Image (tube, rainbow, N blue to C red):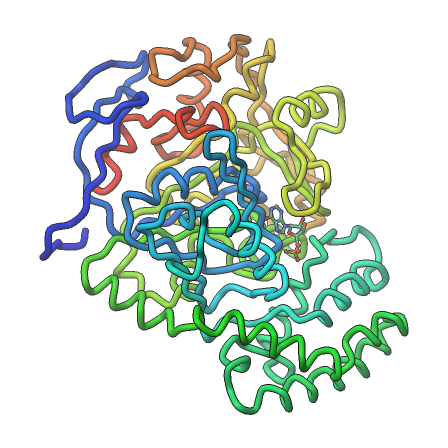
Length: 479
Ligand code: IMP
């Protein structure tokens, strides 16, 4: 663990609504989730989704942010939808880090993120009437790439026409095409291009080239007219005017912060099963959404990362295409969708729902270096006589315990399900471990065993108060 030279900020993790340093105030019925509160040091901590996204990471980042100096969003773009509930107010954030609701926290959007300036400015304008002035505490990397209007057209066109079989079902936010141009380089536009003297010429040149390429892909005349250079050049100038004060070398600023022993919270977007290199390819997003993406996306070396909080729902969901072994295309799946309000924050699409897949989460927890799990949406499972958890797959007649690399293999996997009695009692009022019925604690214990990582946080609803920290969360930072 990192040695602190200056006096570090510390977090007192505790169970229940009020913070205290007393130990131990309660003992749960299971050894692994006996809790007490204690002071721990936090430094570089990552919040990573372990499933296919939508694990309620935004709630946790918002909750933990006041204990950190910086919140850093490092991959993905407006395909993400982070919902944060503050009292009666509901904030839906796409680009802006979930730490923005705390005036003392510095927020960063780093080189690994792809930014749609129009959407981002709408997001900023939506926060202003609610008293949040992002200009004070948001910095955007000059190295971050721009999602341009032609990327959205390319995304929709390719989604509609090009592949045989199952479509990836992207969010149509231009994410894949933008990352493709980033890697291809020739047609990329970065934040720094907006504030350079060569901006107008570059935008006009790329707009012309993209028009030729998109015509061949099948884009309509109307779509092509919308990206004409005479429209794109003034649009980029208007973005530059508003965004320039926030554009900065975030890499330098974050390294300064780390070296000054400030505490950094890295906010993952999407989930590790959507990771471009390690997820359920090709039904993935275009960035490294697992824990391995933090360093490259944020511009920090591994030495500044101490802890990884892996976030998963107590069941599984997925939006878009791709194999999903524990999917419940029946009444039970419908019941989970209804109880969990499982509809996409970004697209409004109904999410596919299924049982918890311990094979998949064990894989992503190991891949991401997860120290503790946050198990979310426990309240949704409170209305079932029995629950099931996937403990292995059967692939072509053989039992396997790993995630196969080919989508067709994963599609052929039949989940081997273990039945666990439901507790059938509401838990949304739970504020301490003693408020959980034994059946709920047994479910948590089984997930810890199967995934191989202790549960540090349980969530029983969208409100901040509906969060329970276990002794294992207190231990985070003392590894
Ligand atoms: P893209 O990221 O828009 O290219 O979409 C690729 C795949 O990732 C699609 O299946 C999307 O539904 C999924 N996806 C992208 N972002 C999110 C997210 O924030 N939550 C859940 N799924 C996502």
